[in-house]
Length: 299
Image (spheres, rainbow, N blue to C red):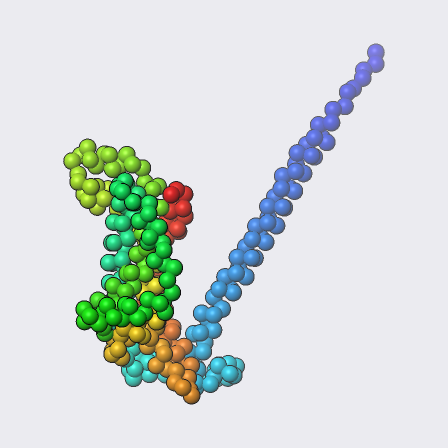
């Protein structure tokens, strides 16, 4: 008797099935390495100006930026000592915190209530109202400077923190109101209805139910308001006349004269100025990314 055997391509199939994952893994590994390499390069590019600023702030002479290689042999913290002890840095810090925190608190409060009202309430002209807010952003600072100065002088708010805070609020509220309106649109209307069933007033519903859910949007609005008030120069240099009431952005200009610029002191001051901004960013960073993305899903 003769027997016949039938060969099956099991081994070939096994080789094909085992080879495919290896190719996929190699491709996935290559893509991962490439993406990590791009991120590392982008991070180095982003960090370079900061590191360079810190490096220049350690040079004792104002012209060290022309020969940065010589800073290595004479690094010192004298620039920081001079800024903290011989200038009005602490006064600038106090003024900046008053203006920025006041602008953030008042501006975000007005913007949040405005955005909630337009998002939930249907009153005559509510759509046109939002467009009016948008139109106010179209006027340049040079056009607004003179009328704002006249208004503040009539109410005696020139060289006054409250006057500068109100001016900043007039610029940040329109944008933040649009931002908050878009974020409130993502919160279900059923929450408002549940609040009314529980006997809450519209303001009670807003304060107790909606605001806790809107923390990411509030964080973005607060961060925008803080940075706008922190770095603004034109209004602050026009409306604040006393050198003890300068903000950081205006105080930096005192290191530049008509014929000279103390760049080493400017670099040290800039490093110190970055500390409050970094601290505020660390405080709101948990909700910042969520607020930036969620507000654009509706509206």
